Amino acid sequence: MAKAARKKAKKESNEDKQVFYITEEGLKKLKKELKHYKEVRRKEVAERIKEAIAFGDLSENDEYKEAKNEQAFIEGFIVDADFKIRNAKIIDEVVADTDSVQVGSTVVIKNVSEEGSEKEEYKIVGFMEADSLNGKISTESPVGNAVLGRAKGEKVEVKAPVGVCEYEILEIK
Image 1 (cartoon, rainbow, N blue to C red):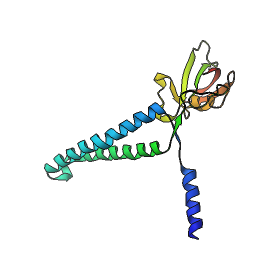
Image 2: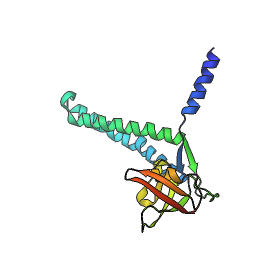
Image 3: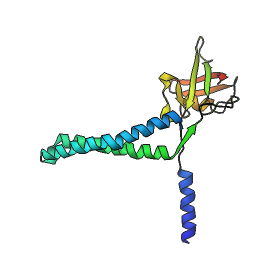
Image 4: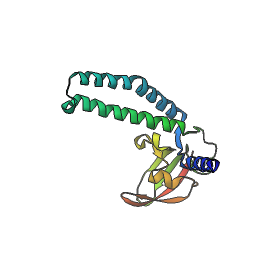
């Protein structure tokens, strides 16, 4: 019976495993940030807590409460970053297949439902690296999700907060 339970638990844990798409550069940046939080920020906040305790009466000690909140944030970041690093899937910077949009592709699109709209160029990335101001959109964004797996010349409907827009895929790089 224990063997069946272990097998079921293993299957469930594999199903729950979440993949985080990230470039090699993004992963290096996340690891560097994690190292900073573990080696520097933890020590800084521990020192702040120690100093705040020295002020006495913790029930009315705002410095202590603030430092404990910061400590909780730091520890949460560390747990989250460790999890993302363990479950990271590297996006190849050079995408060989330009027949369809995939994670790592650069796509040129145009909003055909809006007269006079300009071409837009985006790199499709995982949510951790999304930065629309710098031309990087997530696979989980409305536009990124709509173009994923589509080919040049296809039109896609995008449901966005402002309504439904239609985009044409002009180019895949």
